[in-house]
Image (cartoon, rainbow, N blue to C red; front, side):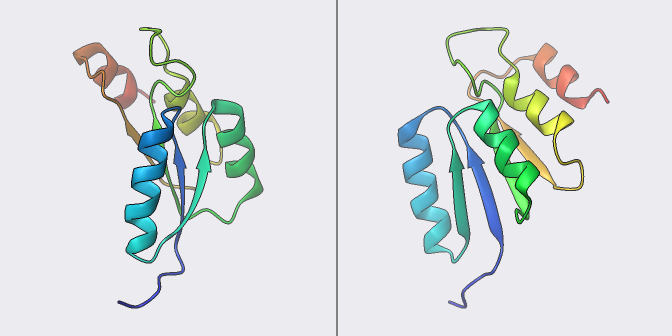
Length: 101
């Protein structure tokens, strides 16, 4: 397989998710940069050099139902970089909120 030059920011507070998915993506030839909290993700996005970001919606705290810190990072940081927001805690209201400008 040809080596990709694409760089992916993978941001999640779950170290197992980060490790497993970094291994998969790197195995496919992507360069992966990890962040485990909202501030670190913001800083990395602001530095540039990232082609796409994959962010956990509850980036600060999985146990806090109202945590949408990953969504806020996606909305408010580096608008020119495409972002994918994932969550293991899906809800209708969360989906509506994610789709609002």
